[in-house]
Image 1 (cartoon, protein in one colour):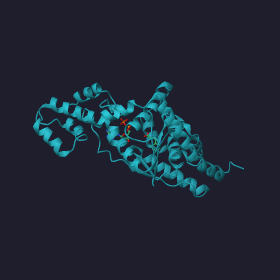
Image 2 (image 1 turned 180 degrees about the horizontal axis):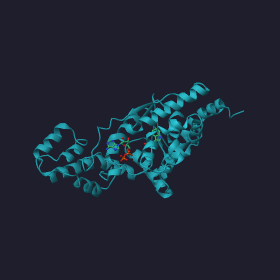
Image 3 (image 1 turned 180 degrees about the vertical axis):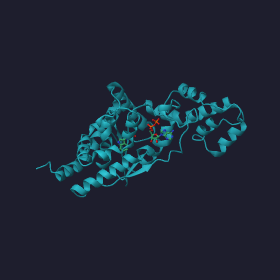
Image 4 (image 1 turned 120 degrees about the vertical axis):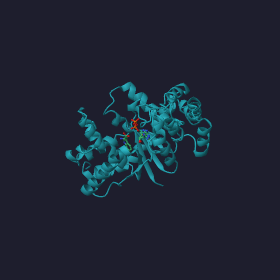
Length: 311
Ligand code: ADP
Ligand code: TRP
């Protein structure tokens, strides 16, 4: 069975773009994989400096994964910080790569280009991510297109280590999630938390209603294009075409239908999410952390011996 590894930063609430672009496919892939799903809390620390917020977000991600159908008994859901092997291996990789090599990373370059100050954690971010992936002999890494370069860095780290100390790490492949193209937001542009045009995935029915009602429509058109483009994610070809034909020019009716269709999909997931108690979250993370540590330990013993820190 293929080994799958993916990670998500605990940095905010999910929208339906995240669901159709990433989470849905990850949950499906996990059904037929030996999978690990990591909450990248130490990566989040490169930008988030609010302990209460971080804590809340970490628990939120566990609930999100369970809600979209990841089974914590089958897959390992764990926190990066609960397995010290990640930061340990990242340090070893830091000592193998050069400063100019890390300077090519998009995340770092973009920040500097915007005139923002980058902390050293952001600079070495790719090596922590390489450690995440390589520790577990990962075959595939499902991620959004923006993370492709990071998986390339992981392959580079594997090659550099193998060349220096002998064959140790498997070279992973990214699986770019072909995000039902790009899910558009309420203004027709790419849905993104940074544009304020999102429909929340686990919002209340009221919040979803409010977001749908705010979808921008062109008063001259027969069919509200922005509504339709979101609606097609929830309803398939024929029935969608019939609905839009029947309600030509009736924007309110079409938006109401979209709200109902979102509710049909999201309602049961929202319920499942709400049924995950604080004690469940704690148990899932403790169990996941233990299983992740157990798997990484053999690899780390080999790595320590190879670099020469064990006598
Ligand atoms: P945001 O743009 O809201 O900050 P993130 O960058 O946190 O979203 O995205 C997390 C995941 O969700 C990524 O894998 C990304 O590819 C996917 N994703 C985000 N927005 C969309 C969208 N509008 N359409 C498709 N996939 C998306
Ligand atoms: N960098 C990823 C993001 O921001 C999160 C992440 C951390 C990750 N470690 C990972 C993703 C390992 C895949 C594999 O989305």
